[in-house]
Amino acid sequence: MPQRDYYEILGLSRNASEQDIKKAFRRLAMKYHPDRNPDDSDALARFKEAKEAHDILSDARKRSAYDQFGHAGVASQGGFGGGPGDFGAGGFSDIFGDVFGDIFGGRAGGRRNQRGADLRYDLSLTLEEAVAGKDAKIRIPTTVECHHCGGTGAKPGTQPKVCPTCNGVGQVRMQQGFFSIQQTCPQCHGTGKVIEEKCGHCRGTGRLREEKTLSVKVPAGVDTGDRIRLAGEGEVGQQGGIAGDLYVQINVQSHAIFTREDSHLFCEVPISFVTAALGGEMQVPTLNGKVMLKVPAGTQTGKMFRMRGKGVKPVRGGPIGDLICRVLVETPVNLTERQKELLMEFDESVSAGGKHHSPHSSSWIDGVKNFFEKMGF
Image 1 (cartoon, rainbow, N blue to C red):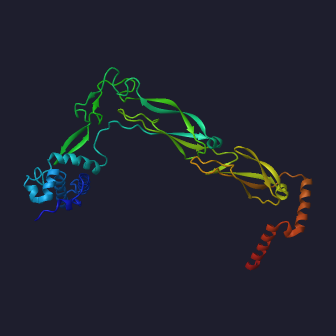
Image 2 (cartoon, one colour):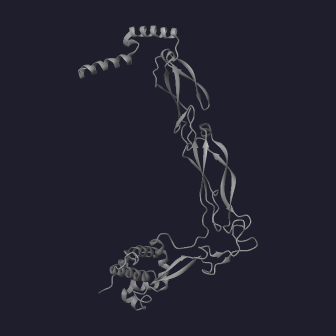
Image 3 (cartoon, one colour):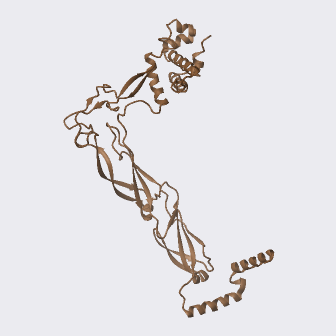
């Protein structure tokens, strides 16, 4: 039975790069590997076929001979090691080290120079502070490099030794069946070093728990959910790894007067029914001082008044928002007998005017009457 074209096996064109060949083999190896396809002879055959194609095309000399003379050119050079079924070739374990990591989740390897963990700090601000911005001082617990051992984890005056199991590599190779697997060294756990005498202060970890005070510049206009990143202020990394980052999470407290929506502020302004009926002016607060709100005669409850530019300047740029005041006509309570008499006289006077004084009420009553007539009530 004629052999298939190696490029066809890997699904590649003849001008494929070395990286393309490696990627194609890894993809097929993960798909047809015997561990993923137990007792599947077809998968095993395809796995061997992909391995053969990879070994030829990833070798510049063999690939050149194959491109010129096909399979005969490769055979004239003695094949590719131990033949199509030989998995003991040294090159296979190297390429398969990458594939094995993808098949079983994560790459095999050591844990040297691990980056430190990121930290989070919740910063609570008043609305005034969030709008204006501030320089805040925060104190956070964190992990720092041990001052006594310099982060080595070894007793002061001593140094970690090269791991005798992996000779400082941090990884060991284990033979399993027809292939070898690269794993993290079980003695040094990937660091490549062992500590014979641990530092008494950090107990061999090379890190200490401390608290530190940081200055955080909170820009004007931040809102709940925004966060500020302080690079390198997280936990220190292991074995000389870089420190993580600190994320300051902003939470803006609720306000007694204002509520905020993006760049706009909202507030409710109670007015008497006399002011609502006759109109007038009244003071309303803003975050920058007092302003006068002009209420026209005949204002109804729920009416919105917009004060442009009295809101918040967004932290990411853009125009300043507005202050929107919603008036609420307040019903008087705890009336005296005389006040009740005056209101009754006022009501009789207004009722005599009909629709002229109460257009909304009159139209609503007319609508209710029509509804009752249609329903036969």
